[in-house]
Image (cartoon, rainbow, N blue to C red; front, side):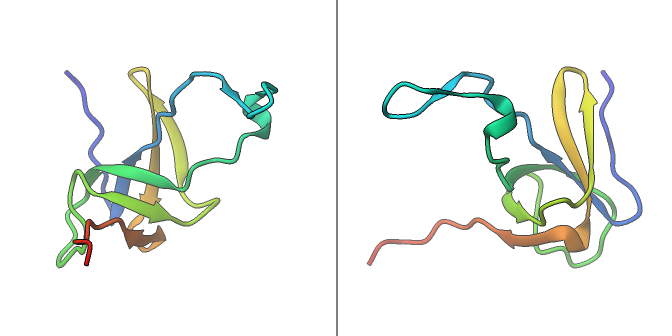
Length: 95
């Protein structure tokens, strides 16, 4: 089995989308070209970076138009510089 391992302070994100058709409340089908791209993704791999604030499995918010999109073994990935990560999604307790 092959896997992608990022180098040079890059992070590999899984951006594979659900390919199901999306429709509006009134039943209009939204084509892929009109859909807004999600800017959240799951971290799949991290290069050797000291003191990272993220880990494999975290969901992160990344900069729009950052990184390189890759299709590898039927999945879509984004290879992005570590500084292209803007935030990490964390669970908090309700008050």
